[in-house]
Length: 279
Image (cartoon, rainbow, N blue to C red; front, side):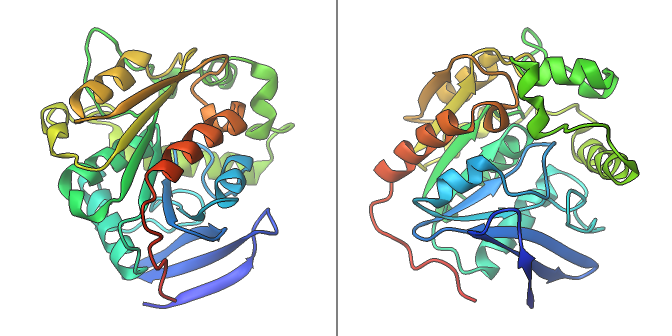
């Protein structure tokens, strides 16, 4: 493995790195010090270091990779579905020398984090799922963003559309359009059939052994809050938290509130500081 350190990211406290894999490179941000937190991003917003990451990095060492095919990461031919992403992150955890990291996943990334905690509970110190996808609840269907116009997407993601500027600033140029198309193509590759779910996941959640927090925005119009509640019901000992005045784009719309909830939970569940990352 080689790690190529690049120029600093959008924050002075984070650096960009690349991990070499057969067939391409994976891009990640790393910032902060302390117990490691592996952050698995949602379908949107890859490739940047946000206020939410910065807040977590005030207490933890945050490692925020782009999923293969998203943001600054190349598409890896052997990573074709969420099951492949699970093994991809098992490999990443081991290659970076992370010792039972906290794993925080949002939306699509929450689904990946839950599957990881089911498959390899021994690798995870604690788990935070932010409005996670992944469950199939026909009585509470997930909205299909692929069928929406850009204006409809903003309305679906944000309780206050005025706060969407963190993701959508001004008129997009050709690079913005191509990047968004690439991310949505990768999202479809992983989640199209069955749509954004694994029908077997719910019955496997009893395998999760890590202390778990499920936190959801109260005004989520993409993934109904019932999904988060079901996760909390099925994962042994899981805590559930509802954060008001926020839509599905939770760590963009109310980054401080979600960072505070995550930091408080992770701090409580950091018994011993792991040694961190081998360089």
